[in-house]
Image (cartoon, rainbow, N blue to C red; front, top):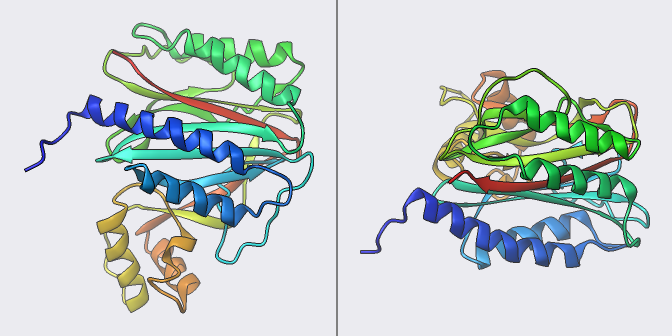
Length: 289
């Protein structure tokens, strides 16, 4: 019988797999590439490397900040000059590594991306036991402002726990007065979003990602089938609508809407910058040992 890994070993294994997946993912971001094909390739790579998918690969473009994963038969294609954010999650036994990078298609770089990378670099220096949340947020805002941009103030870094993608502590990108201290043993996904817009995101459509909220009775048989599958396969982790196409090939939208209505599932709306500003994102996972 195979020995069960300790949580710290699971996190580190997920991180090593993530290294290889991130490197591979960068090779896929090019003009003319279809977002659906990129997502499928990245998710297959996670499995091939021995990991599990912690959440649908997010491939968010330009003013879309987060939560865009391709739909079934999605035809969206990358264009020259697009700012593409690729957010990837790998887990081992529920212990998650959450990372993201941004690329300007066809260009060597972009100041918005450089601002995010510099702010993340400075923030990571503070990710250690005893640091207070407001100290990290302050550095992020200062660095981003030095480039002439805004952080996205209603998006945040966050803690990671087993099968929980967004746990405490929450580390906002913008200035605040949160006195919470980081503690030894925590795992933090520190992410920075930068924009040339106002610095706020809003919920928008379509809904392409869902997550389990509670196991509830439901009449619709397709909805019952989805709920049973979600509980077994994804637990409390987010999942993509497109992953269910073979589980419920007909009436999928009706079934999902019913599960949302009874609060069995929660929606993760696509997030757009309020003023349609461009957005860049970078993210790294850190274990506080």
